[in-house]
Length: 248
Image 1 (cartoon, one colour):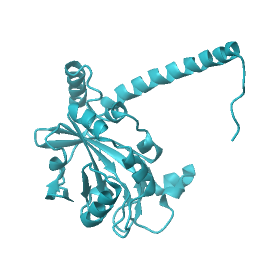
Image 2 (spheres, helix red, strand yellow):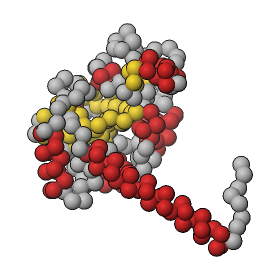
Image 3 (tube, one colour):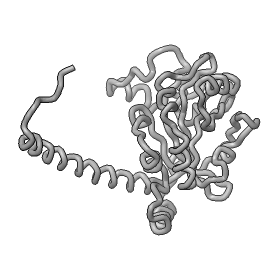
Image 4 (cartoon, helix red, strand yellow):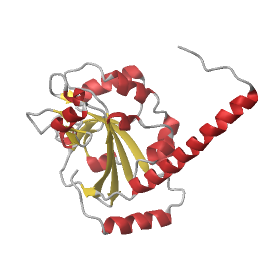
């Protein structure tokens, strides 16, 4: 691996200022994109998904833990596997208690969901020393409906909002390579209004890896960072009321 060129402080400063212009532009574009994401319409969840957790059966509403928002990490863990996906595990290793607490302060819960039976999840979770919520969707349609388990015997092959044919034309057909069912990563966000649940956002592929601190997590949600709570929430509600529904 080659190292950067060695230059004088003055030469470095010229190049650093040029890069700063690009960094500021990226920050502005990210802020604009986050605002646009918050204004997405949302879809009411009408299917009664049932998960299994340490305390028994749980509904999607239960996963909120009485908070207003829920972020679900689609952790790749096929029922036939004895261990979870190494890449998903690396991300889970960084899910600190402090980060989760920062989300909780913003009325947001984060939980992982996998197709593996709860016994396998609990065994793997204990071995890794993790304490975050992790539920099994084994036997439910959840993974298929949110397109993180690809099994053409169950549902058409779709990932990251593209069909199998569209991926093949785009040169990303590798998502569908291998024996099905195929587990894929993703993150989905939900908003609760009383007992009504709405799907607000899902991101897949490399988009699912665009995480960082708690603010980066919150940027994916409908209520955002909530640094100015009341007015943005009102604008978002007005915009959604005027927007058509779209399919989850």
